[in-house]
Every structure is written in structure tokens, then in C-alpha cells.
Image (cartoon, rainbow, N blue to C red; front, side, top):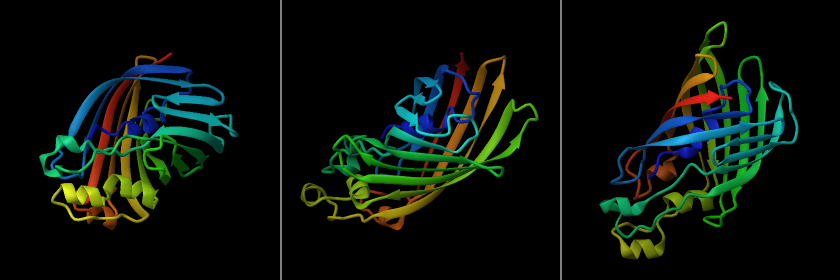
Length: 246
């Protein structure tokens, strides 16, 4: 499984100064819960654009329907890379299990800044015909500590994630055909909710340079933990990035 690119694109530029273009490099790592698959990391170039209505952050594209000014509630159309993938061929223990491909999701996103932190919610459906599933998430992020001049900040958050049955079963279920071809019993996953915590921050220096780091711990739902192709009760994703804002 490749490290979670969605986590990077959703969070890397969220603490930055409003700017049209940013570019840099990021190291991304993930610890997958699937059997026989270890932690992986990659280094990739990153580019983003933020205009009055259009926001482009790697494989994430958003269009603001309302809330054009900063720190206003904002309703947006969005297309994002889904945060799940399984490259089963990389694990001997998953022999007979098919690969689960990355997918793109499209839908609606709402962001609501408040004095105590920022609430956000997203609801999206698969547009790549991989699983035709639905994913939703509600987040709350709050600045825990920061410099008076906003040159650095430490940010904590909580997340509640929803996966419908098609989405969850595609990535964590075992089909009848897979059961015949492998040593795993057939297993079906229903719609589920699961929660997690995030911790990250940024540091701005030398004018337009910014260092950003973020990690997310997700406590897997019981239906996922009980899947025969999963051998962990949680997953961890994270990244560090260095960008220059033009």
C-alpha cells in the first residue's frame, strides 16, 4: 500500500498563508493494517494553487460556492483521491486476494471556522467506477499553541469517518471468489463509523518558506478489525513537507 496521499493534500497547505501558488517536496509515510504489509514511505514533489474560488492541492480540487473571503463559512464542490488502497500482490499472506485500487471521490465539502477551532464536513461518492461507494467525514481542528506572529503553530484535531457498505466491503471484505482462491473465509463488511486523532503543525521562516508536519491515528471500526485480511486495530499516516509560497 502506498502512503496516504489524500492526507497530504488535505492538510499540507491548510495552515499556510493565503497565496496563489506553493511548491515544494514532501515525505509521506503510512502503517497499513493489512496482513503482511509493513510501513512504507515515499518522497514526492508537491504543487498547489489557491484562488478566489478554485483550490488545487495535488489530486484534490475544490470549487467554492460560498465563503470567498478567508475565515468565512464555505460550501464547496470537491474532487479528492480516496484514502484507501490495497496492493495485495506485495504480501505473501494475502495470496489469492485481489488488489483494491485507488479511487477518486466527488461531492460536497463544508468548512466552518469558529473562535474555538474549525469544523469541516465532507460527503463524496466514487466517480471512477471502482466500488461506487460513499465516504463521509466530520473534522474539528484547533490551534493548541502558536506564536504571536503566527510564524509557527501546533494543531490538534479529531475526526469521525463514515464508509458505506460498498466502500467498506471493497477495501476490507473477502469475496466468494477470493475465498476459493485463498485461505480466507468469505467476509462482508457493512456500513461503519470510525474515529481518529490528528496532530500537526507548521513553521514559517526566511520569508515565504514553510515546514509542515502532520500525523493521523485512526481507530478502525470493529467490522474492519474483524476482517480476515486485517491484522491491526488501527492505522497511522503522516507526512513532513517543505514548501515555498510564491
